[in-house]
Structures are given as C-alpha cells and as structure tokens.
Length: 473
Ligand code: BGP
Image 1 (cartoon, helix red, strand yellow):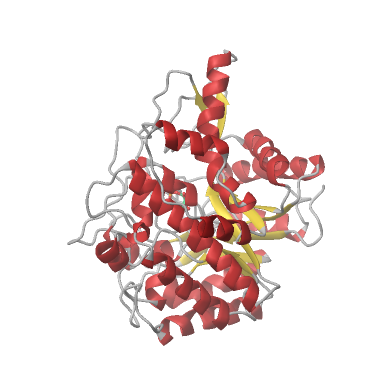
Image 2: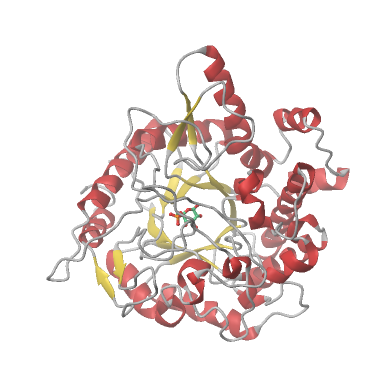
C-alpha cells in the first residue's frame, strides 16, 4: 500500500444539504433555499436541474438532516470512524444574511467556532469550502450575483471575515465548490444569474469575476496566515473518445479543455489558456479582463487542487458544442459500454480515477485531494435495523485501490473525503433517497422520520480502512 502516513482520510458535506435551521439565528436565505431541484425523468432522475424561484421555497434545505442542532453527535460518529479531516462548507448567509452587509452576524460565526472546537476535540482537521452552491439570495436578486463586480468585494469581505476569525482553527480552505459548473448553460445559477436570460458573454463575465474573487481570497488569506492552504475545487468528469476515430479524439480534447481544464488552468496557473481565448473570439464573447485582473489572477493562484469524481463519459465528434446534459452523465456525452451506471445514470469508473489523477497531476504538479466521490444509492433498512450496503463498500474499495495505484504512479495525493459521509439532501434531486452515507439518517423524501442516525455496514468497513491506512480493504 502506498498511502502516506499522514494521508487525510475523512468525509465531506455542504451546509445547505445538511444543516437545516435555514432561518435560525439571523441566517438569511440563499439560492439553495429557492432551488426547485430534481424533476424526474423515466427511470432515472435528473441532476442539477437548478431552477431558482424568487417567491417560493422548495428546497428541503430548510430542515436538511438537522446537522445544525446535531453536529456534536455527527462529529462523534465521524471520530468513531477515525476521520482525520472533515470537509464542510460555511453557509455564507449565516455570516452575511443578505451578502452585502458591512458587519457579520455574530451568531453565525459562533456556530462554526463551536463546530471547529468540536472537531479539534477529536483531532479532526476541518477543510472548509467557503462557498458551496449557496450564494445569499439577495446577491442574486439585487446584483445579478457575480455579474456585478461589487459581489467580488462582498465575497472578499466574507472570506476575510472567516480567515481572521478562524485563523487558528482552520488550515485547509477551498474558495468555490465545483467552480466549472459556471461554464455550463444550466450551471450559471450557482453564480447568481437567475433574474432573467443572460448571454454567454455575461455568463463568462460572471465566472471571470468568480475567478477574481477566488484570487483575492487567496491573496488575503495568505496575508492573514501564511500557513493557510487555499485550494480550488472542480467537478471533474473524465472524458474518453467514443471511438479511436481521430475526429472523436479531437472533439474529446476540445470539450475536455473547456469543461475540465479551463477553470483549473486559471486557478492553478493564473492565466487564461489559449484555447479559451480562441473560443471567446470565435463565439463573439467579449469579456472585460483588465491588466490588473491578469496580475491578480497570477498572484492569487491556489496551493492545491481538489475535485469531485463520480463518473466518466464518452465523447463523439458529432456532439453539439454546448452539451445537452439531460442524459445520465452531468456533462453530457454518450454511454461507455464497458461501464455500469448508478441508479441515477452516473457511470461508475474506478480505473478512470487513476487515469484522472495522473492527468491532472501531470498538468499541474501540485498536491491533489479527492474531496468528493461516492455512490448515490437507495438503502434498505432490514428488520433488525441494519443496513447492508455492500454495493457501497465495493464502490469505495475499487476507487481506493485505484488511488493507491495513482500514488504508486507518483501522484501527490494528500487526502480523500467521500461525499455525503452522513446521508444528506441530494443537490440534484432535492431528495433524501439518493443516499451516500456511511451513516444512515432516518428521513424520507417527504421529510418524515425521526432523524435518528445509525451505522451502516460501510461505516465499520471504512473505520478499518482508516485504521489500517488503506491496507485492509
Ligand atoms: C456534487 C456537489 C455536491 C453533491 C454531489 C452529489 O456535484 O458538489 O453538493 O450533492 O455532487 O450530487 P447529488 O446530490 O446530485 O447526487
């Protein structure tokens, strides 16, 4: 086994999918509180069907799994599994309820202070996503989110507030979750674009402002504490050519550049890559990128690279330019006949993880972390209360084997935080029944249930994995 001694084993969640307590202690509403997620399609379910509705609140983030009130119990369970690290996000609207206030909300800050203390009690290192799909709703409403440059300053104030407050409690930070979703037609809402129709120019301008916000945070964070490790986070959907026809291979390269590489290139290398400049020219996308912006991007490059990995997809030459993503895999593409899919159509590809780790590392040569990976599945509670999720154990075992091989290949992989280590609300479907956890939460899609926690079979399995540093799979 090649896992280094200090390898960061753990798990990951996001505030809006688990905390609940959506309007408690001064919290404002966020875009996730207005997100009508998850329309169903035959047999499978759609994901990231983000529709923001101004008037109504759809998303079950209101109660989540009530982690806000039960975090002590949950952290005790993480500790029992032996977590070295716990990836969580801070709800921006707990700290700045509308996003544009001058002073932060003290009770919001206090909540995370207590949570970090609880983690440190067990020697668990927090890994904090500063913004995970939950822009304060008013920033979208009043400013069109990141399309307005003022939002960059609001984000910087928010990030700086966190850095100052938690400088002795948090070392690992991520500026934005799955930042490359902002390149997708159906992903622009995460940057606060939901008031009207937006042009592609506006969409990329908003994303540019997100890059600037991230860079400003990196610069500010390093000033506050030079020990901080501040990273980027991308949704990486590995792409293979459908056939070895050169046209398919070329098309794969083009889409892979734009959807997988682009944001990482900006955040790790600090410059816009040539292929995007050409894409903008060809599509009449005119962005305002000043010399100052360019200098800032260079200065604010990240310390490490993290990504979510759930699936790979296949690309054929005749696919449209902006993908139709309503099929199984999130970035579109066609099915891979050699792989099986989850119940939600995501094609499971453990070997692809080794390939991906090598691909990313050869490009950047900075430390990598897999901060999301996992199998969304329907779990069955037996009469005696046990949950025998062998399918989940199989999934993780295969992925961990491939991570091990990637480390052996020479990749500097420093940690692994499986997604939804405790069952939570799915971002894509807005439901509970797409479960990822080692810990079961008694709650159904309609919001019924005791919210009691219980250990699945995979809980004990992962505990052994961590205890033996990946030896006992
Ligand atoms: C990622 C998001 C997470 C998480 C995960 C699983 O894209 O960063 O928030 O939800 O996907 O997706 P889903 O919940 O749709 O199964």
